[in-house]
Each structure stands twice: as C-alpha cells, then as structure tokens.
Length: 209
Image (cartoon, rainbow, N blue to C red; front, top):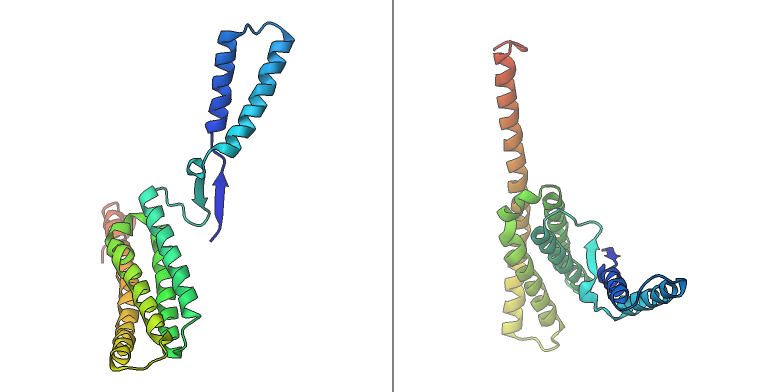
C-alpha cells in the first residue's frame, strides 16, 4: 500500500507572517533589510518543516481517493485489516483454513475495488466494513492462538471446529455481498436501457415492437 505525503503549508504561512511582522518593526527600504528578512525566512521555514508534528502532514493513499474522506478512511481501514489477515494466513498450519482466508481476502478486495469505483454505494455495505471484516479478522486471530496451544483439550478442539465450520459460511456470505453490489449495477443498467428505449421510440428513432 503506497502512501503519498504532501508537505504541510504551515511553514509557508509562518514565513508570510514573518515578513509582515518584520515590515512592521523594520522599514524595508535597504537591501540589507531584505537580505536579513530573507535569511530569517529560510531559517524559519526549515525549522518549522522539521518541528511541525506529523499531524500536519496530509497523507494520501495513491490507490484510495474517492473524494469522500469518510469513504477513504473506511477503505484504508479495510485494506489494513486485509493485510493483517494475509500475515496471519501465512502463519496458520491448517491448509483448508488458509484457502478459506484467501478466498475471503480475494472477495474483500473485489468489494473494495467496487466501492472505490462507485463510492456512493459505500453506505450499502457499511456494516461489512465496520463489523463483518474486523470480526472475521478477530476470528482468524483466535484460531491462530488456539492452533498454537500445545496442549490438546476438548475446549480447544471445539473452538477450532466452530471457527472452521463458520469460515465456510463466511466465504459464501462474502461472495453474496459482492453479488448484491453487482446486482444493483445490473438493475441500474436495465432501467437506463428501458428509459432510453422508450424515449427513442417516442422520438421515432426506433420502431415500437
């Protein structure tokens, strides 16, 4: 996940303020005055650039920029969850669970790609991002912790079996989410075609059937 950092404009504003204050205190009619103000400006700029906390640095993800900050934050968090999920998957011994996790990751990336393209559909799947995905990550983390336990026991076996069975359902449920999103797009397309067809018939550009 690549990050593009844009420099804060605060140092520039501080330099501008410095010139205003300097002009009020010292008359700028000699070359030496301009030279001193210029040197002070350069020093202030670099000091401010290094001293200002990273809070003032605007971070943008190159591949996530929907134009809506709330949607961007939702997608960025989801990408972070999926990265953690991938790392966990690589450490799990059970091959079947690894395949299920990979299937969930692939479907999740499809959902993210869809919302990036159609950010107005974000609210329709907000629960997926706010609850389903992070809870799935927690379940996978719990499975990994149970798998790492050296001592076998009924509770450990039951807990792992519960998660294994539920992962099958999750794979199906995740695919249903992207299917529902695609269904919306198909319905919108059908409506557009029907409306345009009717208008073309009214204008006699095509014959009525």
